[in-house]
Length: 378
Image 1 (tube, rainbow, N blue to C red):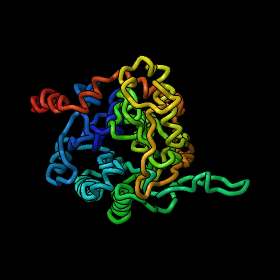
Image 2 (cartoon, one colour):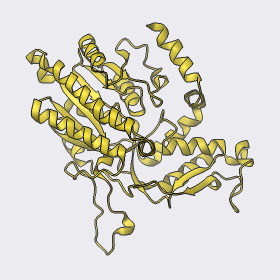
Image 3 (cartoon, rainbow, N blue to C red):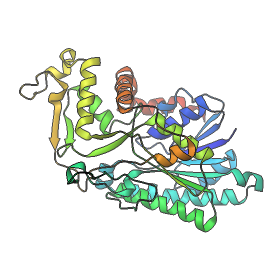
Image 4 (tube, rainbow, N blue to C red):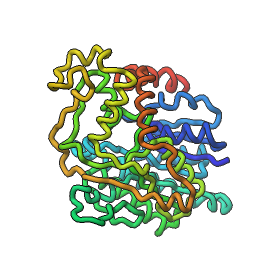
């Protein structure tokens, strides 16, 4: 059994990792999270009382607090997921992204190095620092509409693709990737890096595309689509990603990078229309009182599709992401279990079944829940 420290464990991907670790492995978990707007301990309610789980409300930019956590819990593996991750927010206010993603990663690396260097030799041999990053550090790829002529093969991001970030968010993540690799080369800290494609699934904060579309549709609100909606993303079900991350953290080779993708390239407009179709089946718009009050497009009255609204494109919007995940399959035996069709259906059903979670996250009830379930335990 290992003790695994997960930063950002109350976030969307981090909470999926922790649920997987507690429910499907023998490992113990220390969740380190600042609890910003997107950190949600309700996503961990199913494991929060487990004897192998501990929570520390700590900012990764706080070196003294990190040192205390390392000394108190003595982790064997660090899985670093704490990050600001919303592109639109990074465009509006990049400072928080620089602070958390770059300064925070530097602070964590330095505290991890100090902790690692005082470990006895046998524990140093098995210690790992796993940095979780994004495919957005690579910039974007040619869109099929740009590929002229027959026989052209659409390129994919590989572990050796040059970095070319487009947004303040992706630039801050690229910087953190470089820091991690530098600490491995210069200080011999045993690190690994993973870069993943777009995640989706249960417990996703409602600002991101898929949960936003589901919840706006149910509320009879507009479904905003940037530009023509032809931007392509490779979609990865979050529980598949969690399995891959734990596999890399426990079995990956030090110094290596692994790309993790879902093998599901979809245009954004395809994703939106797929969600609308599933909602029509599971929660028909004709029975949704919120749809009746919406000014629907001609010919689409009382339909979720009528809520689609094309809006001005995001500045510097990348057109296509696509991951070559052959290395992690070849070397570690991982591949996704969910297709996009199965995963998106599970996701829509989860949001239909968990409206209480959504309402609490979007209201002040969440802070009351925190006060009752965590602060009173201190």
